[in-house]
Length: 462
Image (cartoon, rainbow, N blue to C red; front, top):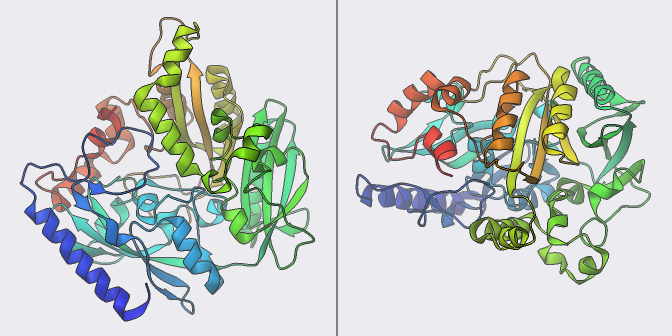
């Protein structure tokens, strides 16, 4: 989509969506009907009631202004396919191809540019939002609907749906040079993250004399963790390919440096869904050779896991074999860098999950408050990601591990993303996720409660 015809098609689709919402009976639940999801909590029964088919695509790219008008259901795979030929990319590109722009804004997102660019919602300039009243309003940071603009991130569709977003873009180079730097313990790694952030504030992040444009890391165990430092490059002596035979995460502790094309760098984690594909045997050398390249994708593994969680085939087999019951622990949490070691040691003792992803994050604009997910703008955080199944002690059941993690995050003055299961008591939930501010937004933009409220949607639906 591009130019005037794209805008015309967009306005036609908006009118159709408004009509579909108006035609629903007053008590009918409202939810988008879409093909993909990256949620790891139940979405409620039945199909979505509002069609979203016409909201995947890029309307227009302004290469001079470095902006793009993008439909809310556009996957980052499609978005990147449109921007890279223009020599541009979004300021933050979440790791998985089928995450949508609207989903990353209403449900948060993060990646290796987040230490300098924050989260995806921080590079949104304006957005059209379908509200519970059936209106489509344009929310900007300084307009009539500024309250919705700053309250939309982390609302998970409970205030409305983003139909169009205008976002900032930044220029790219052909390649990314990676350096995998090893640290002997997590505290040493945390100190290095702090030093890297201080170099950002002094005019540009660098390490050992080379600029750092991308930053994430992996904790393998108590005496082995790595920061992966990425730098733009115009040339590469050779490039690696982690889309078929080789597995990116296993290269981190085998190589000190690497080069990837910009596209392969952006999707380096998608091929194996970080390391989660090993649960399906996809990293076994024999299976790997037989597994078609087109099915080495996070959305394929997501569907396999969803099938297991729904039907419990493996769980029944494990039960017959006398194995302990298992609890799924699929979480991303933001921990202040000063408490990173404390949290990682707790997580290892509680769950034994290895490896663990680390992605430093700093709020881009210190003067802004995002009402439903406020971060301390003076603090550097580290997103800690851990995904898998953990054995339950005899006699325990869900949420034994997940609830312990929620309490540990609170002790560390961190925050927890809500894309997966949550088990907060209601008063504790609202203390952490907007409380009074959310109540005002809900009464303003969804006074009749057409959309499921945030607590019911993210905590009670499991």
